[in-house]
Length: 277
Length: 277
DNA sequence: CGCGGTGTTGACAACAGTCAATTACTGTGG
DNA sequence: CCACAGTAATTGACTGTTGTCAACACCGCG
Image 1 (cartoon, each protein chain N blue to C red):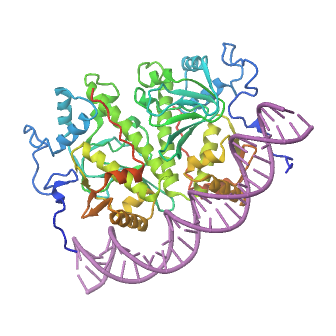
Image 2 (cartoon, rainbow over the protein chains, first blue to last red):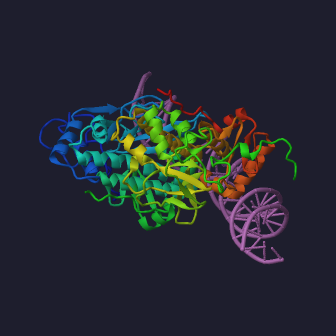
Image 3 (cartoon, rainbow over the protein chains, first blue to last red):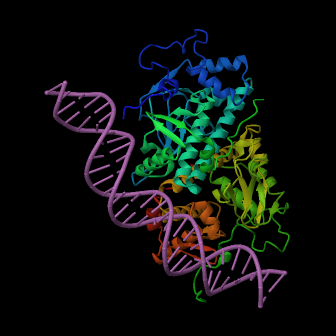
């Protein structure tokens, strides 16, 4: 069981949390130039937004302002409760999920919020939330209010940010549609493969995935709630996919070994990309 | 097979189409006062919007303006193609659905657009559609552009319409979340019951349902695509629910016989209503 | 009359949920 | 250092549900 010869170190596939999250007061949040634009909170946001629209220097500064006030959330804590009013936040590190609890005790995960994602669609500000948002790992968020203001055209001076925010809402919708299709019309292994491809693709956008894998902090139970399956079933699918050489999961790191067959199994279509105007 | 003693006449549960849709050039679209505010296109829109926000006389006139230009769509025709840019429309009569085709030939229905509904979320104007919108019956629509303008705050003189439009987008989202939960975490009969309750509730908002039933033009195949099941399964569920005295479907009319047990089976929660401010 | 779409039914196989028991790994407290 | 409990992963056996295949009835239409 101690065979651990060559596989990619976990440290190279972080969850978006800074290397030593508990200890040092990190330098990114202060005005110290741009210390770790590559891996830090600022870098994640800039990378995400830049895939959606070109940002001016002024807009870059707005983003830097966002990162000035980071809030931390312990795992399993609720960022938003279903049915309440709650201002949207922007994830800068860690994973969260939007989920609905059912009367019978089950729950259904509607989608995951990864670094760079909004916890809730900004367009619904002022309306009760339709689902709860829960931190799955140690989580760091910043307020999304400035983005909401920009998107509401209150601040027309930042067209790039406005476009990026609108596109984020749009992509959220696409992901929800994907989720419907997964649950309604795909086999269990197909669902799993599709979700893995989606996560890999989304994490790659913010630099949190390698070419063929990513760190995934989800338990089998979480995956089951997301895929509409039971825990046992999820486990068996993982085994099956590993035996078939499609992917491997070890120590919380997913390695996608055969993109071609994974995509075929998942009925995968190239994700939506936007020309960064 | 000819037992048809007392059951509600189909004419009293229309699809939102005017009683004699093929024949006479109907009076509603012209400026002839408000001829059939109760059953006509204008009436449907006003009723729907009024459940979401109070409308001023000026706003009422905007709605009347919408109805001046009605477009008709034959059954099975596409209102929007997935991946294209296409301006949203407002359904005033008939049923449509938003659906995604899969590479394997299957398809998944994401939701239904009933009279009073938008064919596509207005918030995504200018972005490619994530799914196709198809007429399921003879369909009548009007342009939703004025509503989109109002919602984008281009026209702040109509707060009621703006609120109503925002709420429509919000409700669309809720319905999509409901769809995810249905597909992911409910039994096949539960899914069916839940969908029937949803449709009844939504149709009741626009006056197209009786206390205990509504006209439903969906084939078993359509229902199967919406519920993530096979046609055979849908058929068996219908039989089962009828035998158990929960509901009855005859001649395209659904009669909900036992709301209590239907709601229990569906894990139903009271739908979201808004105080019409 | 034949035709296609729809609804219906039976038989069977494949799939997924449940129950139960075991293992591994963690952090805690003795 | 070890015992312990708690969480997660794993596996087997069994049951119930769902998909698939096939055949047939019904209906409106040309």
